[in-house]
Length: 228
Ligand SMILES: [Mg+2]
Image 1 (tube, rainbow, N blue to C red):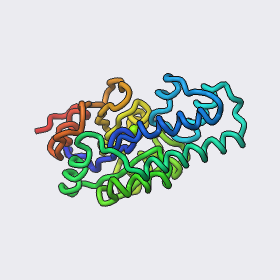
Image 2: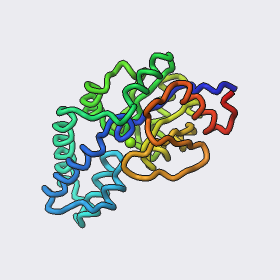
Image 3: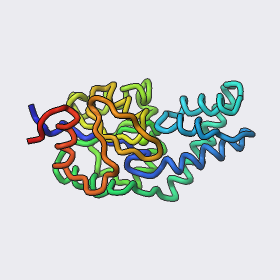
Image 4: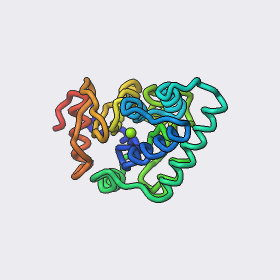
């Protein structure tokens, strides 16, 4: 069995770019417009979530009834504010740009797998660079976002590989769970919040210095195989 993953599946927010900080701002602005303030616990629960789940957590946290019109208005506000901030430019997570380039240079298939919707993802890709990814899957293109496995399964399908042969790179418990449920090995690189250990998971403190060789070793370790 090969110790090289069939593809590397990259999460975006918090893994490649420091966009979780941007979301923190747009969520706080939206909560304020709704007449409240998002609790720290709710903000943590939202990390890695898709928009419907985010809105549910926010309204619940603010003690607001889940009124459809008001939620739609809040959704537009979050998207508008996040879009403004994405357009202003996103910061790379440490080592992310070099790691993306190294994996691409090695000729490995890659996917961007994000819970963020297509419109915002395209804004982010203006800065990250589309050339790093063979395919991309967004949260609004699958029936259920992370923590369900759908985005990862869809990415594997588009790449024509088995998700079980892939290595996902994730920063959040929600994302790591989605990758795991899809059967992928997971490299956890925490950003804002701790991510629990688990079978099939390996971790690094950052992406700094990450090479294809390093990823091959991570994949083998996650699969409990010898990298040699
Ligand atoms: Mg993330």
